[in-house]
Picture 1 (cartoon, rainbow, N blue to C red):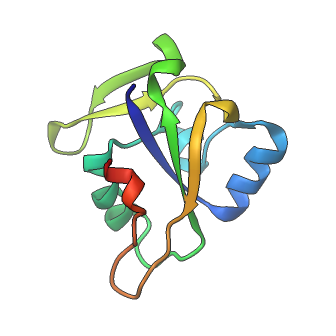
Picture 2 (cartoon, rainbow, N blue to C red):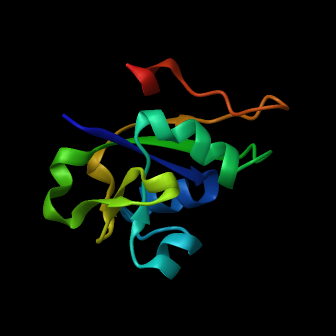
Amino acid sequence: MATIFKILDLESFVQAQLAGQFLGAEIDLKDGYIHFSTAEQAEETARLHFIEQDDLMLLAVDGDALGEALRWEASRGGQLFPHLYQKLDMHHVKWAKPLPWDGTRHLFPPETFE
C-alpha cells in the first residue's frame, strides 16, 4: 500500500473532517489538484512551504485507494510527486497527527517513515 502525505493547517483539517472531504488548500485550488508528498519528500515540503508554522497536521493517506485520480508528476528537481485530481474523501486518511514546530524544524511522527 502506497502511503502519501498531506500537510495542512489545523482549521482546514477540522473543516475537512466535518465535511468528510478535503477540497484542497489555496495552492491546490489554484493548481487544479491536491499536492501530496511521499515520506521521503515530506520534510523538504514542510521546510519549503510551511516554515515556522505551528498549527499543522500531517495526514497519511492510502494512495492506492485513490485510483486513477492520483497521478505521479515531475515537480521539484524533477522528482515525481503525487497529485490528486479530485477531492480527498477523508475515509482514505489512515491517520492524522500534529506536526509541531520546535523552533528550528517540524517534528514528524515516527510513523511517517515506517
